[in-house]
Length: 221
Image 1 (cartoon, helix red, strand yellow):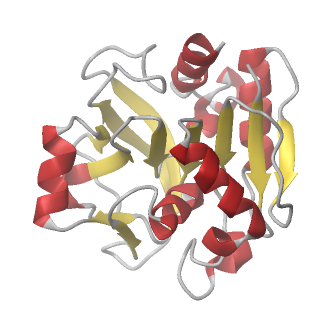
Image 2 (cartoon, one colour):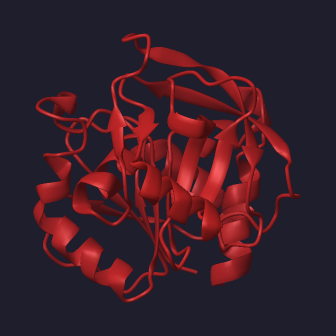
Image 3 (spheres, one colour):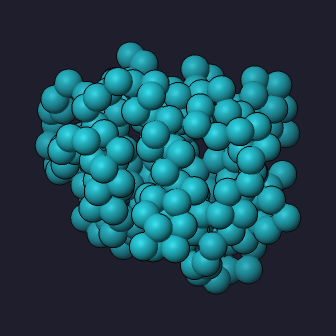
């Protein structure tokens, strides 16, 4: 399995996800600069968390127009797996690869703490190592994490089993219907606000995020 992590100016979790993935895969993970226009053959593309471009203008909007994103969109449309974490989730909505938008948190404050999220669909390449309705402890760290979508979009997400995770009695940002992560129609693109890469090593206080890395290795190797 080959994985690539896109590096944007201002990102602060690109190395974290590189380490978590490389430990799960057992091989190096390619780091790709946002200004590049070419992407080597890969099985997984990760848009990491952080504050790309300082989250100025609108979170994820500037990164969505980086040169490399044209290739990321093309690969996603071809079926290559794409994972967007926190700021990466914002980028995915800005590119249109995922529906809806990420708004400022309901409390208008930056939130950084562990939250409980529930696995809503464990039959995907991102979640196959989890049990149905399993509750995970995963950190969040965001200011613009309130997921919003129109009623018809929400209905489609539910009907097509595209809600990946919900906050479990612990909604830190006011997201509609407690949504913490969603898939595209083919379930090959996942965007989520919590940081699984920050819960992939017992030294950091938890390993619930390891299941996502292991799921990807199982599905894509």
